[in-house]
Length: 320
Image (tube, rainbow, N blue to C red; front, side, top):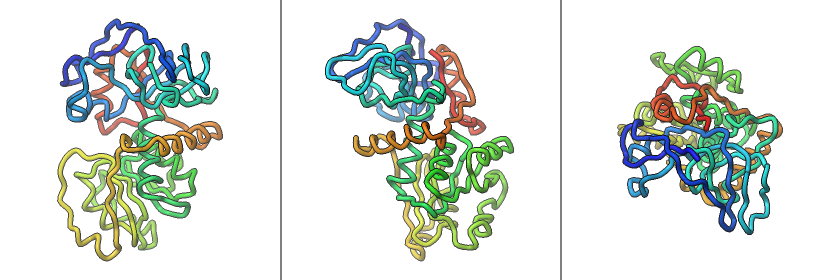
């Protein structure tokens, strides 16, 4: 089968399309014939050597995918050949024609959800869910500010928050992006390229502030986020591309919190909880993954360049 392989850490061009042996499932494992593979910023960090520098080379990148189960190993009880699934992590990587997975790294994919959409679930919806509910402990009635709401994680957060009864304020840098956020459930959307745009938060919340901020670019926004929090407010840092200076006194009066988040720290129980919510949301229509670009597997390098552009809307996927 064909798969992308990385023999050395470096720029996107280190990824090569190669012929590799097809996987064979062992006990508790399944093989998924992939119809789409999700591309995430974290994939680029791993490829460059910033994350997991001890990762054994060569390897096949990719955490997310969707397709059909073609083989099951002994002791598999809840998956069967021919079943449509989405993949959230795997044993072999998803930038490939097939992926070897533990049984519960696969999850049922409703018929009305396309494979490209299925490949857009694992990391974006997982990060959004963990930030909102497992770290910030958001509840119905809270107001959440989602920075970068037109991206993959941002749109997932908007949909999850609306489904849970939260009031959603998003930000986006283009008119197209702002329309998309509103179409996906945002109550209000701000232009984050506009000077002083966060000043609008006070008017939108009757001077109360927001309960939760989902921060995708902490090195740019974190200090200003602290000024728009309600009493007991929480900022969850999902992403950052550098260092930042803050005034910690902004945390005192409202007893606010800054929380870190990584999906890799989620326990098996927490992962099971979020994917139960995702399957139900996909089934009842409250979750609708947005795919903006589909590229052939051979163009993985172009996908890695594109996923790091701030103008990217929704999700980029590769088609094996």
